[in-house]
Image 1 (tube, rainbow, N blue to C red):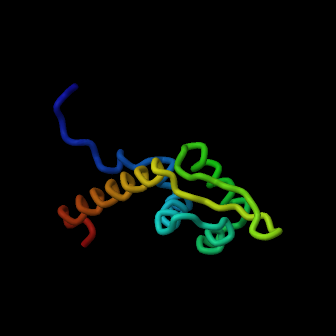
Image 2: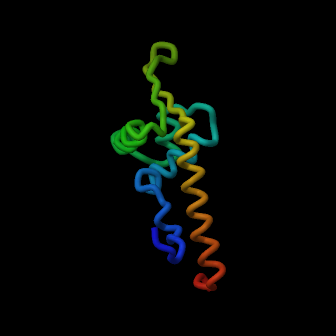
Length: 110
């Protein structure tokens, strides 16, 4: 291993998490123990298909848990952030904070 400058904070961003819709999904789910699909869809202003596609990616990565059932006689889907999903979100936020700090210390945002 060679000594050199530390890696740029942007390299710590996770491709799965960083996509804006998926980042939105994870942050909404972090705010609650469980969330209905329709609530998440409405909050993020997405179509059913678009939300489903992003949830599939997050579920395959082990970041969200999807539970289907019924509320009365009506089918319902509930979503939950997994422990792994919470850790991934915390790492993403830490990387974003490092990027912001780097920009602030170089006065690049002024």
